[in-house]
Image (cartoon, rainbow, N blue to C red; front, side, top):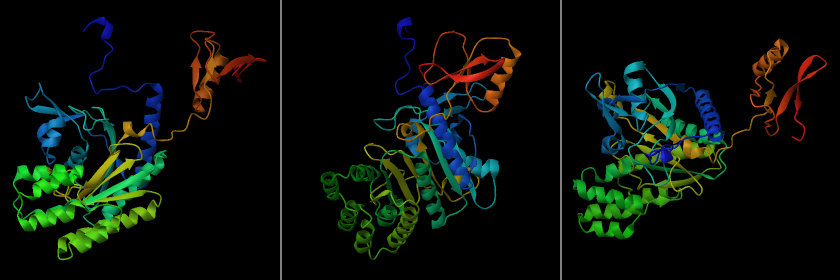
Length: 390
């Protein structure tokens, strides 16, 4: 690397300069405070863990996304977290090991070996909340409503759409069909792309009864009336009807709490099929091609840490959100102070800082700042005055 390009960062890795860093930190604090008002306690998981803990339960996708290296102290493989969710699950199951319901929230940097979507980088800052110990539909409703309230707290400037589905519907329809894993992977891909030509091509490789169910399922995405259509299509499938009841209950709660959100019901959503065990949901912002937040129920993850606990939660990419969130500007202008060892000046500077004002010592006299005030000596007293021409 030559001296001319030493400033280059790895592909997909970015930095936040003062304005963006201020926006992100203000947003992070506001959203964590919102989680706290719902009873979610803040935790800080480590940046790296042993991979046999970090990757547990989340399958090959997370394994491929995780940057790994050998720990020189133990000889074991370490991973830099690509997702904080399994870490928080470990903390609930092992480090805390509380009885009853546990609510936790977090925020931190992650690192991915490659971007997870076209627009994303490799180092998202993830903020989320997880609820453990409750398998009820009320717990799912709470976590979805909290997620939406977080977006309201962020005061996003685009229309918000809740995308919601239920993994249990596909599982109930096809778990006994013994579909070849390679064929099932193709089905998953075609359903995610909503590609009817590909789905029709795949139907030829399925038994007639399985093909009929898949044909019905493939069209069940769109407005909330999809739920009614699904009830009609699968009227004899008790497990599917129960899942639809749960989905409808959560959706009713979410719309009651956030009446202005858009809703997209997608019963073909199979993201995290091997990981999620019930409701799955995401938040999209108008004009943005990828989800800003994702979540769902994942009841099986705690077992590998010694406590099989029901779990549901969500995670938001803060970096993807800051451009659309409204962050208040500083309420008071900065104050510029001259360089001096005058005790009265030092006392005035200290008083202003204790009052929450920003005071900048002018190490390069004559440099002005927009809208700044300046400490000047008037009648033996240091006072802040607006700079002339500001």
